[in-house]
Length: 197
Image (cartoon, rainbow, N blue to C red; front, top):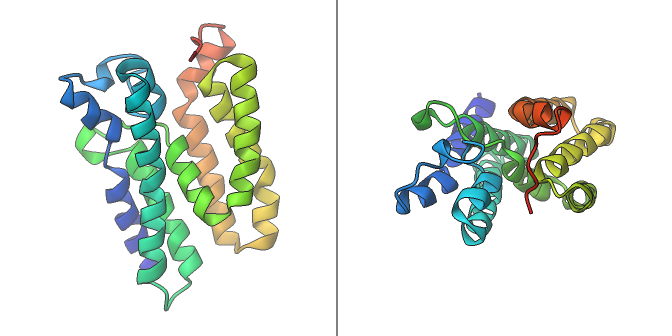
């Protein structure tokens, strides 16, 4: 039962849509501009560099805070598992916020936060791959997809070092990331994905 509680706790943290609220301060509904999602990349495109940095940091922190809260609340259970479920809930809340019709961001920054606190060495590998891809292609979406592919290749490491349940959670996170990037993938295939810088 603690698993459900952790997902719910994380979900409500994830529902805090930083880019959406920053846009509202400027009387802009970010969901009506750019890629029409409320993630960090679209915040940069629509609201500028400062909004991008604020959104990126806040979106990363959402899953970290959810992880820590669940980790310590359920320390009498499997607290590592509780933390991962909390971070997973934050990703779900970020991607599918109930108050915005379940249309949020794509979950990359929030996933980064969970991986950072779960295993920072794993995140450093994924960031390295993603950043190289971004500098080569000038497309943040490509970096996000490469980082997600990197996570998939690292899944055997998670499988052998941690519980099967944690492995399955990261499998689901990877699948959700690809689903949320469906339009980006289509544009990349058709050579219509715009450069990010």
